[in-house]
Image (cartoon, rainbow, N blue to C red; front, top):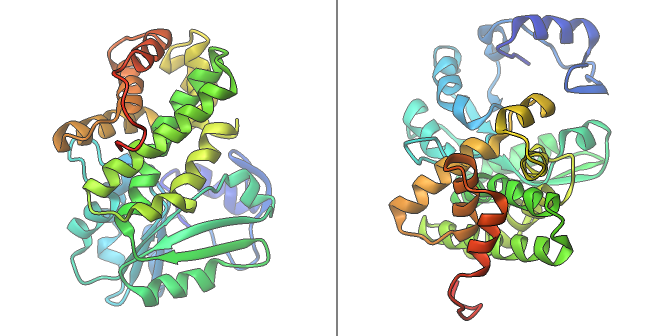
Length: 305
């Protein structure tokens, strides 16, 4: 394991756990913590990148000189690349080329619960079924189960949009709108996710699975979600900066809201909930104004999705 913060890497190597973000989850005996990318990649065939979306291109570029010719790369990154609107697999393909086996890991997986050994399931998507199967076997254990898929676009779109919707769900709950409002936002948010995914080439059924509905419900309803906590803080009158200081970790949904807005605009896909979250984060709209705008939209059949 390698990370960009050398001081933190040294601390984790000594403590044999990540006391800053995941205290109490001891590293397995066979996990080496190293200070250079070259050491992390030397002699290994399979590589897992776990960075925020804004750091994916930089990280993929940094590993190029040290990758073995037969190396296979997967990532747990969620989100469109800001300003290009590209999904993670498109970014990695640009950097690493067309011939290398690639895969994405996604699904409802709070790190705290995984670290505690609680039962968890996720999805591994790859066009290379052998790589997906090998990863599923390598990652699965007594309390961790990996399913496979070949719908890379669907799995990535689900991961890209759910954080934006979770901010909206947090704001709704923070305003005291109740369970009816929350489930309406989740259900209609799933429609928006599916609508955009289908336009980008995903299969609709993917959004009924772990990387779609599963991750969306988890992120919108549990306070382990940083994005939900951001929404709660905004509803209580805090600024984005104040909320981020309080949460003390990257809140992916803030940048994701801008990226999703740009992709929706460029593709002409209607995403009213995501649009209102964007307005709150970037245009100064109040959460109550956003809810009013959603409730006053033209009535239409639910099946028009």
